[in-house]
Image (cartoon, rainbow, N blue to C red; front, side):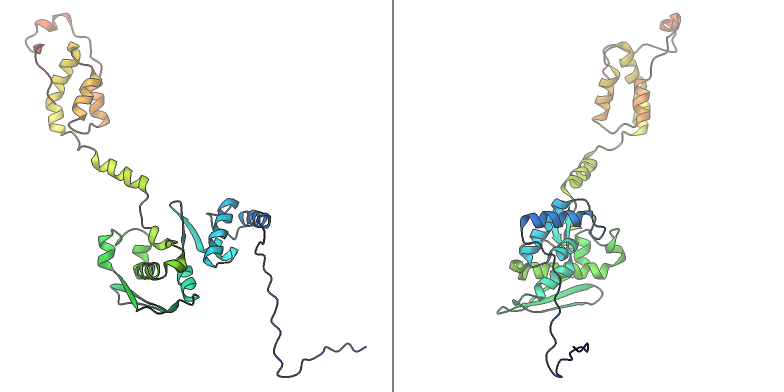
Length: 272
């Protein structure tokens, strides 16, 4: 028997190599695969130690046409919502037979994305620095300061591809776009800070403090009632609140006869 390797005839087509594919075929296989993914160091932090996140991302990927590992690497979780990174978005659209072309350009001030869906006219979306300023993005710490051209490109791309190919993207938002959307909880916190009253004027506080202290000493109002009344007019500092609540020193017996310290009238109400 000859040990020589058989050389295929010249010009014969090369046989395609078999590619190993670990894509699960059953639900039990998917659960096991997700456990392996969650234990791996090769997945993003949103999926590390979270097999349930891996499973949902794999299902989203299957609906979009992404294999399991592609789904885990290209689907982000931002503000509790799944989103596609911009490079995966353009890859999905270009691989669709519905897409004729996508062209992107930037003149230094505005990014332009031109897309053509088969059988429809060309669509153009532009995102400029004026748009970024109107949205409060220009000068924002992070990518908008470091890579403004790239961020303009991603915004123009997101608008164009989401508008023209919503069926290809299955309504999935674009990660670079929703990263700039402030979570509702933070919006409420900002609104609460804005609605706080201004600080109580220091000059008015110094002028009114003796009167407030006299009312507290007479027993007509408590220190907490004075603090609440004054706080409705302006924000009090911790030092000002301590000054209102400071304990009274015992007065000498003859202090009631001393003309230098006249008693305030019981009928006088404190003014804030």
